[in-house]
Image: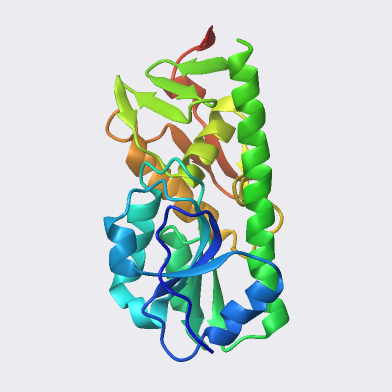
Length: 259
């Protein structure tokens, strides 16, 4: 089967296979094409050079071929991105530990290959449904903002603007990934509330997900790193045996202001 040409990244695509791709993955592309999805291929170098707002929804990465370049590709496409992206990493059978490591470093899910065609399509479809929910929520937030009804949450030095997807800490604007932003917004929206890991996983990744609770711990760790040193390191407090919460005593009073 002929491999599709590289996309220009200016045309909207549902799924892009990031090359190099080890072995033959043409049958995976064909399965998604049968589903009516818009499919393309793109080199890792092309993605690293491209702006982080290209209209691609799901990127499929072959970690066996990309190796240590997998995470830089993810970072380049998510840092400061205005378009929501999800990443599915394909790892060799028996390399589950590598898949978990990639999830902890920002990949949204992984699948061991070779795999069943139905499972592969189901994973991709689940990711696209999650994106649809996020996009509907963002569209609603934008409509609310246009009507003057949206509010910016201010927590002393921390300012979270959900409509514009902006965060400022100690007068410095932070560049968070979509996952990091969603997690922070969950905490700020209910300061002091203790969230267990399953609740946070559902809030950030949605119920159509194949990541583990361990991914929540990794995401909290990344968010703490983003907030520090602008905010105290214990702003996101670990409640042993339960989960995490926003430590109100370290932030002061919560107030809200109009956009």
